[in-house]
Image (cartoon, each protein chain N blue to C red):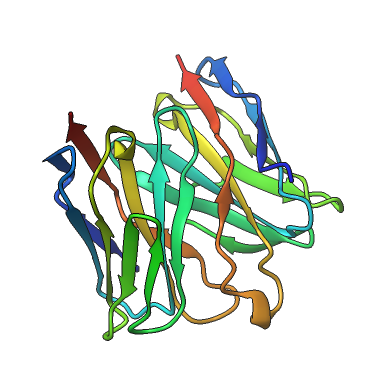
Length: 112
Length: 117
């Protein structure tokens, strides 16, 4: 089945630093989504990407849809303490009935 | 606009019992998906409903079932609970319906935390 790989499992950065997260797949996707989950809450959509090569920003967050359609990355610039959480990538392949597949997430810690 | 609402937030059951979880999607959203989240396995897809029909199903045993009502609200049921069913159960809705809308992203509720003892 389709699998999304996110690594490492955890990242530790200093407040103010930039951080980049990568997500790779063995399959081609036509949609890439990035979500953030805070403790005790459901994942919240950060950025949605629908076209190969697309680069989209949402405040300090920037994400890109890889040209090969098999990867995506998320950049967070000038990190702040509230960026702490679990970041999930998700991809959907072609077909109206295809399901969304999630990576296992990266837990981000920000040291003040 | 209200988000996805899941009830109850917390539930404690014993092995062998059955449980029903409820989800109200965002107004206007016709697709509802269910995911199981555990620390070791991440988000695992259970099933997706659209217009009261199950459109997609993950690799879970038949003890896990669901349904969708005409107002798009959905329920999932787990029968004969096992300890390993302890997890956060997340519901998500989207506009996804026609081929034109198939790229609409999922919007999640805050989940139901199920503990099986």
